[in-house]
Image (tube, rainbow, N blue to C red):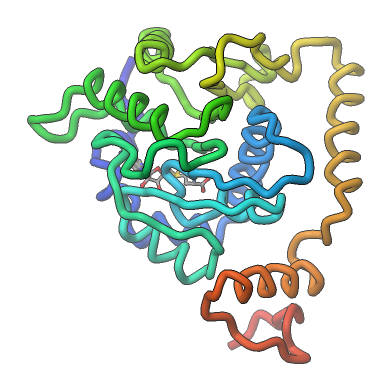
Length: 275
Ligand SMILES: C[S@@+](CC[C@H](N)C(=O)[O-])C[C@H]1O[C@@H](n2cnc3c(N)ncnc32)[C@H](O)[C@@H]1O
């Protein structure tokens, strides 16, 4: 199978300023990343209504992190691309950001995270961009240090794009070698467009893998989807990008001692599009 064009450059080069901009300006990308992060959160099975500390691996411009915030969680993001992290800073996301290569390991204290998510990032570990890079070794280093950084019974969920069966097998075998239980959940396996891969890893012993979406009849799917939407609305969170949502976000930043612009009568107002 041929290499996808983006994998021909190392990630810290591919995700330059131009690419990073797409992650704030392209509404299709923004919506897809948000939807996949919501699904990762669902698969994490965190305790209801309890704010957790989560690690976002390959956090990029903070699109995935924003979803974690909206769901009431705190997060720390790690990413190899300076340009992507610059955009996350500009977007004033709430998470703390660390410039770091996941293939070198997860640089945090043992047991400090209640869970980890990663959206569209882990497939980059199959690259060998330097002479010293051996994908299998980097995968093992990553999974073993991630395992150590998670609290017991925590989970890590990765949405990713495998290029072939061998990559799927390598990911799961290195994760199991590092101590995790789990496997791959494939949502909408029969749809070329909607098919999504999630690696679900567990620290606290073996448990059944969550049910994939889109494996039943179409009508069943619609019911499930409607249920997910209903449960999101039932959480009573203000709708995204409304004034109430923005005020809540700013209040959380202030509580974290972060520099935050004061609220004014213009806060949350729609811009005209002209400068
Ligand atoms: C498609 S973007 C996704 C960003 C973010 N998770 C989101 O949902 O918007 C993939 C990210 O993975 C990061 N990445 C790739 N390889 C990495 C590595 N070895 N270590 C850390 N981050 C990496 C890239 O820099 C990029 O920001």
